[in-house]
Length: 420
Image (tube, rainbow, N blue to C red; front, side, top):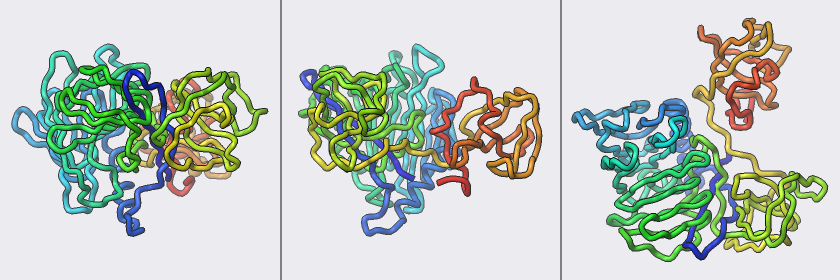
């Protein structure tokens, strides 16, 4: 399973966006698979325990985590959850090295009840919440934590990964620093009360100073003192668990690229595959990689559209070698385990089968508009693994699902034994 990630930064004079990299799964520096096992277990636990929690909720996914309540109660244990208005603090401890601590916080949008920002606490860190009448519960907190990983140096460094909802700003106050996040940002604690802020998608604005950190850049902040905005440290964003975010992202490398002339975006690195999407001259883009010939680059526009563009129409500033692709890099795939969505059947009679294909035995037949819990997909994307209300788990063809039901096929996990 590959993971994918993205970035940002700088002040008002900078117009830029980062270039690209897809990091490999977390592995120990000595080549062992210990880090990978810790990572996979935590991500799977997050999906199983916390994915799809209601806005205004704190959820402990894995590791040694305690949630302190105003009542004095301490909530512990994987899968434990609490409502944000009653939470005083969230602490993730290093533990004994057998698990990686990870928790989620879902902040409700103050203007739209259907939207929420996702905060993923990557341990070991401590968040002390501070009520603020101008912000939703959980949006103001102090962040502290050690700079060294206890279990494995190849796991993500301690911090908080933040993803704002589409077309909305997420407002936070962290260690007294007001942030307006558009897209995705990583916030890591520094010694004292300082913060290391990395913009991974679009931009993050430091409200007190007006500094804008565009995708691909970073800054260190302490109170009202802001360092120079520079390309971020790739090590700071390695192995981020983007599979557990509401919208999975590709994290790029630090740097920037600017389009030098109006250009059609292509589906593949070939001029005849052009689309109707035109990238305008002067706009910044994320560069995700290049083809083997180096004459085409795969990019993501500011609006999130991914495609190919000739290298000679980009002014690129990439401090490291780009990864090579001859097809568009795929999104990361969610781990299997939790319910991804609820879907409804669309035919008069719908056969559920014991495997992903018509050669498998019919396990049950259900009528039209039957609601099914959706868990995953087959490798060929033609079948869905579902569960009925009485607990029967079986497969149904994608052709028998109502198109009005909410699920994104390319974001579903592969069912074990039937995919990668």
